[in-house]
Length: 444
Image (cartoon, rainbow, N blue to C red):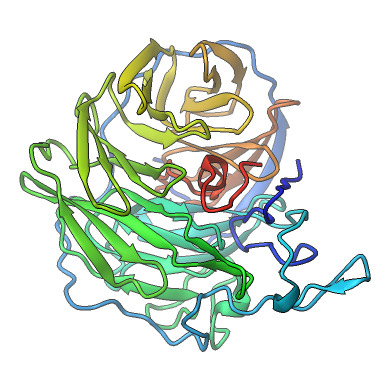
């Protein structure tokens, strides 16, 4: 499935395509063994074992990093990390230089899924088309971050949150990695040697789970997206904070206390943004749904309608929390609709075609209007994370060494192996941010 839009080309995990023709630019595997994709045909049978959500693995020690963001010089202008777009020719008539910035149609030619290897303290960059790992990066100086959630921006870059404190940004486009010293497979470079690391912002939290990019703003003169921000949240003791971070520099711009919400297990557990870039966060179990307005930083909270683990926001603005129960929150009327989903547990994501996909013993497609199961995709093993790529495939990430790519039309499963203590169920491809719209971004 090629993703097109009326405004500008949608971004993929590794790059933003936008000015002219598309630009290309717990089973523990071996720590440095390359991932090996395999293919099996396992059409969904409509069944699945009942499942219940389990506790989250990963490190338990509080982060001890202090200081200011570590940001290697990338040799680029401060206007944005995407840099100047290449001059190409559209139909051989008008050169798509910045002065002729045309937010026209185009095709996505590459995409990536970013999966955290929690027990290894790294993040893997996997090409969703070739199923090959094109980079693996350490996410914190001490290699003890226990990374989990990842979020991909509309310019294709990723930010990963470390459970033990701190967030780190990596460039996807190798042209932005100054110096050219970078991992191109499952072998990591020592901290400080990886040129695709944009910045690391230390934070001292006992639990730091959520991370989510905002859409940023389209700059016609620069022919690119600028002013991208990152939301994250941390908890210490009984106190929860939501933070807004500059996406270019990693500098914390605002820290918002969340009063009246108990940190319970892990504070805020998952997060996503709506079409205006506002923060939505949910808690594990029956906690609170938290909203922070991007402009005013005003906070609103509501009791969750059902037990939560994963969460997402769809293109209609509904907020979803997911575990063995799926719950849909309508911000306009502030009400919930819930349904029990047998065999489901973990993350969820909308595919832009009216289906919400849920992880578990199989991948279950939930009708976003009726909350009934419309489709079930069988997979070789249970998964905890789910994502959608820009080809329309559904991904499931197991808590171990495997990730599965499934074609929802054929049921064919491709298996990626070689992850180490994998744990990711956030917007690991960037599709959810593109799908939710806003900032001139088409939903596809």
